[in-house]
Length: 196
Image: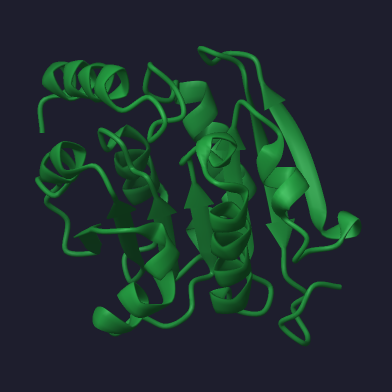
């Protein structure tokens, strides 16, 4: 996958579909590092990325994953899906579809509940009920101790996410990103699989 053509396609698709993409510019390397650290990628066996865009963050995740881990990316935009599916790694699965069907998509590929779900899709442009439903499904399919990491410009993801309690949330700001982005991290209780 050529980096330059991927960035150009990402910008073009943002102009065509601004409500589907969270930013006009792909994630900076500083933001990618912060996402990987917050998600504790190296310890995860099943990872789901919602909205991989041009695949830049996807490739950073693959570089940090264990050899026996699996990464499932779900992309709604057909042109971006066509780009990201070119990534050649036996641990990687690209799926063209709606993130709201995350549970069915995991079953389709025979994957267990994820240790980590990462989302760059903009909850701020979704219908509130759709966003809330998606967050409920993410919470339900996460393994006990699983992490949900969302990098967003707008705080709506936090307003909608009533499935975790406040003590299961940490928030960091990445200033070296255009625009500056917050990284929200929620973690399920490791003993019971529900929010503590």
